[in-house]
Image 1: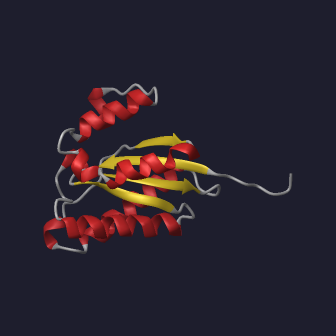
Image 2: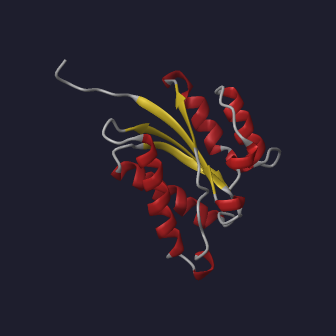
Image 3: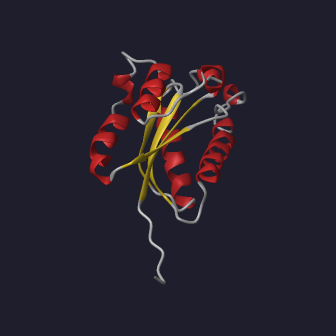
Length: 151
């Protein structure tokens, strides 16, 4: 076949370093989500939705066939971290955690996942990021080592 095609949906999840509440200002958080969406687009991995809570983000995107997963996440973190530090001097200590979660998503689950990401503020009134991340990893059959996952 001479044409290469890919339709790979990803659910990316990563938190701020030590889960600090850097994104507790709703206006700033919305601008961060928009920035991440733009970064996804520039990396040929258009987002369907970006959302999160005060200490983490969720990104639903279509992964480009031209970029490795680790490169995609590293660039998203690097660019958004540089950007947010220009927004306020109080954000000069902003960092993302070292790791991330990346989960494949069936096209039939896109709508439900989009609703879930769009409802993060309400969702996190009853579940912490750590509880959510443990649940997602369990759902996808991933074992996590608690000694290393929470930087």
